[in-house]
Image (cartoon, rainbow, N blue to C red):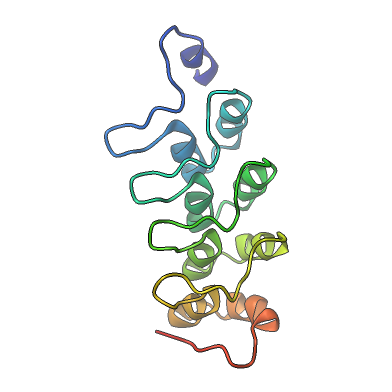
Length: 153
């Protein structure tokens, strides 16, 4: 169905809807790997496009815990794994806050991701995990956290 719709004249697969939702963002948030692969196979879809609040498809995939989707998006060279929303909250912050262990395991493996990087209000991925009581995520992030990390929350 997606291929049929994309084949129609005048269809813009990167055009945001009324709530600033692009097809890629919606598919990434819902974990529809096949749809994401189809959209990313086109040259007219931006895989790192920020919505109205600055969240990227990777932020949504991380927040909803779709580890496979995160891997697909990170496989694209133009997706910045450290790009946060307008508040500066990164995909790793969203995954840690939501307690998504699989996503947390995938993101810190990327060279440019810093689990100790505070976003605009000083919280780090570790502080988000602590404030939400996600003990497994805390254990995943703790080995890379410096001894002097301040925990907010």
